[in-house]
Structures are given as C-alpha cells and as structure tokens.
Amino acid sequence: MFALILSISKCLIDLTFTERIQISFSNLPSTSCLSSTLTKLTINVSTFDDCLYLLDGRLQHLSILIIDIAEISDSSSNIDNTKNLPKLKCLTLTSQWYTYFYNDRIVPLLRRMLNLEELTLFLSIIRNESTYIDGT
Image (cartoon, rainbow, N blue to C red; front, side, top):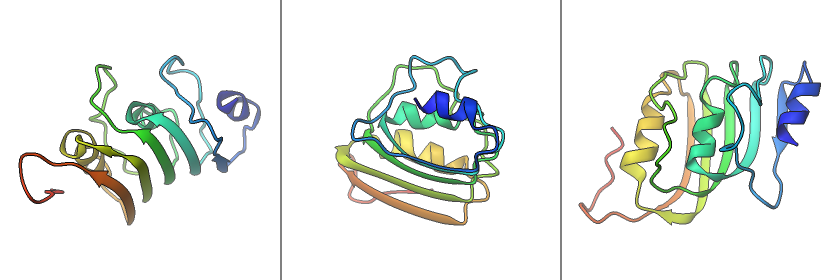
C-alpha cells in the first residue's frame, strides 16, 4: 500500500502512513518506494531495519521523519548504514519496547544526520556495560 501511494502520487510532499499494524520493507526491492518529492513522512514500522531501508536513498528529499519502530534489535541484514543524510533536518524516533542496541543502532544513525536541527527520542534503553548513555 505504501509503495502504491508513492508510485501514483508523483507530487506528494507530506505523507502520514500510520496503520495499526507496522509495515515492513524487508521484502521490497530498493527500486520500490521511491519518491523524489516527499519531504515529510510520518510512519510506523516493524523493525529498525525498516527505518534504515527508508533512509537508503529511496526518499531523496526527506527533511522530516517521524517514525515509530516496534522493535530495535540487532540485525543480520546488509543495509548500508554509512551514507550521510544531509537533507534530514528533523527526526522524531519512538519505540515502545526496550532495546539493548542504542550504541550499535541509534548512535550510528544519528551520526549520519549532519544538518539535524530538531531531535526527539522516546526510547527505553537497557544498558549492561555502563551507567550512562554516550551519544557522541
């Protein structure tokens, strides 16, 4: 459904796509869900990998991302998580479940956002190795 909306809405700049069931992009080819006009996206996804799929270049002009992620866990996928995201200015990232992977998953994503102006994180983080969170 998400891919269909993007394919038929060539001038779409703001999309809120929040279903009760989170969507997953793991089975979609990188050529799907492309948009050269979308600048704001509000979406619920299943996994952190789905977030990375959205930020792999499919949404070239995305500047505002409001995303709720059901599960932030370790990954065995080979999604490129190194390309900078200079157009992303605002990120709201929420997850209702606990995660152990703040340093391994969230911090590398934040480091890619060179021009971030507004950041909202609502996360429950479990840390075993230290008593503080290092966001550098």
